[in-house]
Image 1 (tube, rainbow, N blue to C red):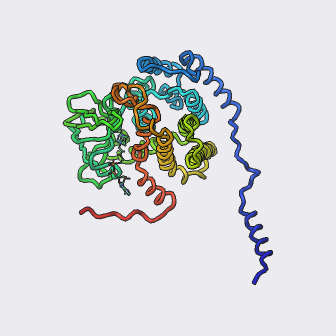
Image 2 (cartoon, rainbow, N blue to C red):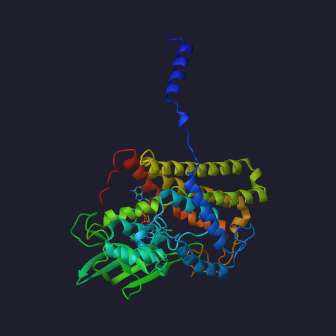
Image 3 (cartoon, protein in one colour):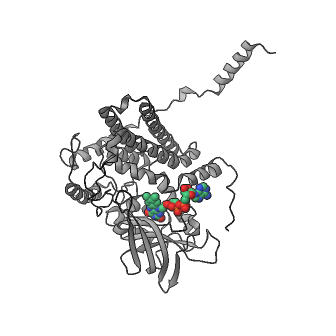
Length: 433
Ligand SMILES: Cc1cc2nc3c(=O)[nH]c(=O)nc-3n(C[C@H](O)[C@H](O)[C@H](O)COP(=O)(O)OP(=O)(O)OC[C@H]3O[C@@H](n4cnc5c(N)ncnc54)[C@H](O)[C@@H]3O)c2cc1C
């Protein structure tokens, strides 16, 4: 038998050899030019945000909020902050990745909106920049940058959600136009959109993932009917969209006819990855509010609440540090965190859902009654309705239930992690009965 002391010693040597090299510690400081840019953005925000914005007790009535939103987008455009990383030739500012991160951080810190239109700025705009023709870029990108176009995403159908390639909506060429028939569902903000980017089957004889095209279709036409779906908090944010001989120009195909699957995957990549480096901030801000609530009503003395609060805080810190790791990776052109990025959507959405359940627990009885301000269903992004005034925490709780579903359900993310990141065998396909 080997002497215990020497085997312990060998173990220690081995552990030392495997230990991380702490000389290469993480440097969380940004370069000086990025910090100079930060100062510029802060000054712009102070100059342009309404008086009192940074005060603890600042608030706006729904009317004031509506007026602010209407005036804010043109100011953002003037400042060049909408999609500021887009190329200068299409009206963007051509910001570097690090500058874009600093910009997003400063707007998040100030709680100032940075987007004109989520679907335009985050999903279809970058997709057109990557796959679109020169004519499509000229036609759509400047209008997205000016905040003059609202978009919605027409991917999901009643029998095609996680299994998106089962979609049945069809588009056929009729002269210079596509004629589209079918149904989309869960189409967020369709009632406010000028255009829908949708997937339609353009070759019904091709294999499931082939024969799909990515079309840009105007919403204001007789062939499109929108039926809002009301949610539990009264918000009718998403809709059914019926396409009955809807039309769009032949040239409004992005990335080529029958190549829509690849283009759609680009869009979904943006949807799942857009907040990897900065998303944690909104959670941290919300967590601070939940802590305050717990301190106010004494829930913070409950050992189980304390434990759950800390667990949430650690999750948020993990998101932050992993965000820095991903950023470093992109800046250095390395791929150390490629596997990690597959986990991001699953991690933040599940963590946030747990945190909001905790928030409702902490609110206690107050969480069960309506303590918020009346919402206006006609204002995009505003939750609740006049007779169902949810508070901000309640609204966030309700919405967190959907976060593990949209943009790729958590179970699907697990499949992606298993198959693509860990190289496990593919999920067995169940034959249709
Ligand atoms: C708030 C919200 C907004 C949305 N906005 C839009 C939008 O604007 N545009 C749009 O196109 N879509 C939108 N969606 C739709 C969203 O993309 C789909 O809900 C999502 O893809 C899941 O599809 P499904 O609802 O058909 O559920 P299903 O695919 O039927 O899934 C049902 C359940 O089965 C699980 N499941 C399915 N397949 C597997 C599998 N292979 N292995 C393990 N589990 C599986 C799922 O994870 C889920 O839990 C939105 C959804 C929500 C909740």
